[in-house]
Image 1 (cartoon, rainbow, N blue to C red):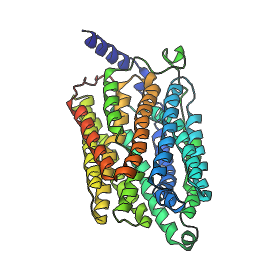
Image 2: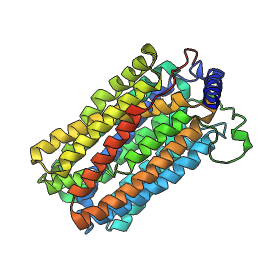
Image 3: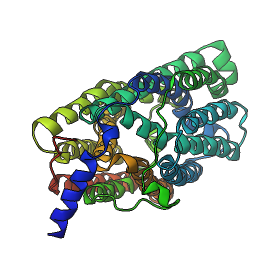
Image 4: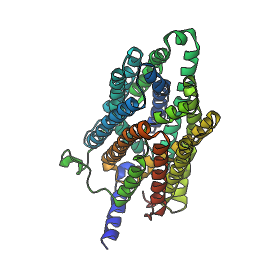
Length: 422
């Protein structure tokens, strides 16, 4: 009886939120898309060559695990507080613009790094700024589109993001092939990343529009953790947190590819193959989750099924990396890995936005990102230690097993139907 009462209350809360009925700023979707495109171009120019760069300055898998683990932990705490703060302030644009600005000032500084500590400082600043901007950006996007187009909107954002991630590795390869790149090596790429980074900041600063946010009653109670979120939300959080305990930094995939015989200078191609698949399927996956959720009266079940399919793809990819393959098969595995991202990243955001009232979205996104990021932090540190002491097969096999367990949780759960009035 209590569960039915809570379900009725939750449906009423969601249908009583007038801010969700009409999009506040439809133009924000293309603005966020263009910003993500250029920002990820800058990020992916540097990301895929960073493991090789660390090796060149005397660091290895253990240092990578520590750097990524601490950087992600900072991001996770920042996301939590940024999410809570997002629900309590009237203007969210400064958080978004400031986050993009700091990240794109920090990236080119890698060009002067001479030790692992320098790399750590840049990654720290980059992850901190992402934690600041990520939640208010997602909330502003969710408030800018109708509920029935939520999956499509987040899918398009991820597609633009990963399209930039296609251009980034290509740009890195071209720069490395020039005389400039031969002379300065990865440092030339780090410096060149300042150009798309500057474009991202200019676009979001000039183009983003917002309607002042009116904090709800829950937000006015004070700065505290989100309370009263629905059971559906916590169930998805538990499943994804379990999976995240095995979802270490993607840089370990790059190091594993190198250990399987892929040359260091080919690593941007790994990112290119991965991001082509990610780009091609992100928007269709988001749109399909919209149509399935509303056309089949399946509510969150259809979105969860899409996420579960992505987790099973993740498990297959990590199992392949665990037990070894030829260098050529690495590229096929990374293409499959892009499909995992397309099925999970945009759809999970739509699941969260669907599951909670509008005035609690900031806290819900922040708590979700915090819990999963802490799990990823533990996973990155554990993967580095297990790799160092037992080799790469064990941590990759463990990651595959946790992904299967999380997928089973999502597929086994019952769920409510979406209200036709949402």
